[in-house]
Image (cartoon, rainbow, N blue to C red; front, side):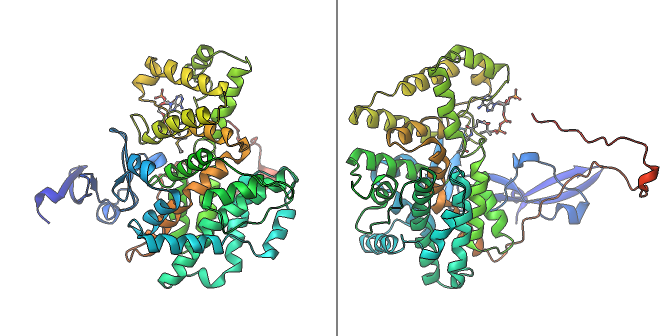
Length: 439
Ligand code: ACO
């Protein structure tokens, strides 16, 4: 290691040497893993704003330039030429598949779409209006109990099988949870259909009438899933890695990822955007009034802002164009599209958003595509989870193979009471200081 690979840290007159790690795209990081043992110091970084937790070869994001690449391929090229299933293979296995590999994997997805009949009873145990994200997470975790041999993956064949099961069955579980929530009979998967066609069939066919989606609808759904397929160390992916770092199995780890995705600051944002647009449409407030409320920090403009992107999220560009084309070809006039465009234009001319570098993110236009496909709003985060499944698996597997893996266990700065003696109940005079405050 020469001098350019060493950083010097001076604290209280003591000098410490820290290795510099360089990524293939020129990113530079300080390796502080030995800092505490050599100095007694830890680093404090709430929200992991500036903390790299691993080296990864899956996705590259340059938030300043608005660049996203999967395994080196620009998202725009994949969106134009690839498909969700092909991209899923790229993410998990590292390279674009050959024709034969793609066909074999497609067949496996078809074969794996069914759920074990016993697992079907789980759906009956949920209340009719149980949120489909809760059902998805619970059933994905339960799935592992049916495949004990896959709870530890020892060879390529087991990996192929686990990957096919998860990518295929997530769509079956998603569709069944929807059918359950609306009290419709379950429609079994049909392996002769493509990935997206099969999903829409399970969602919308009825015993007396088959759902036949248009090519445009299928392409839009495929694109939606593709652009959601990975996004490096986001909250849900980090959760998958965190859980997986304890050597938890793949099913448990991605189930935890689904829970992390559910929050409205992450995968729950796409439905929140539609609620906002709907409220404006219903006349609760105008676009300008809404922007003023956001600026007064009464709430956030959902679908805007990103931890990494300080420029236009490239996925938002792709999905905006897709939403406009889809609505045009299906000849649907969705008033929420006009409101979304007005909201974007107004926000992007306002110094509040300009100075904070807040741009539309992937969630801003995605809900308009899902609405056009007649996917109900409470299913939006589930759709995100279906798309993100390959990314979670790829990250779990990358970490699983890491010989130097250590359990994820962050540190803290303790700010509580110093040591004190236990007080018997009859001697306690002071009221509890417990307070509840929610931002
Ligand atoms: N609307 C209004 N103000 C915002 C928004 C927003 N959407 N996002 C950030 N800000 C403001 C913050 O209030 C803060 O202002 P301040 O400096 O005056 O305090 C500043 O911008 C920086 O915000 P942070 O909270 O530090 O940004 P962070 O990186 O922690 O959060 C996040 C990123 C969660 C995505 C945030 O932008 C947000 O809440 N957006 C809305 C929810 C959303 O769309 N989530 C989906 C994200 S993409 C995804 O998960 C797929």
